[in-house]
Length: 47
Image (cartoon, rainbow, N blue to C red; front, side, top):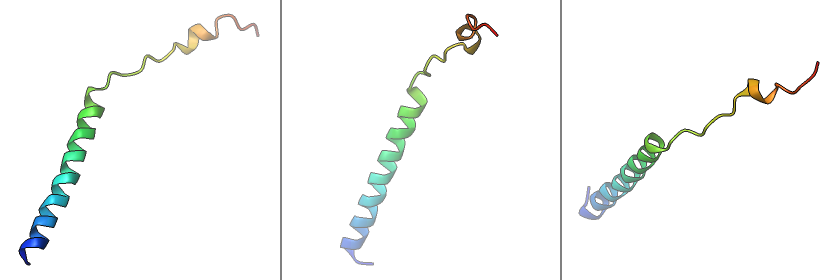
């Protein structure tokens, strides 16, 4: 393997690993959305 190919391989893997770490960080640090209580939304429904 020549030097240019090795540099390109390491660069591409570096970009992929960097993006993977960034998105894992975003997923793990995002606060959960508050989910509405389905029972309280149906209190006024007359059956």
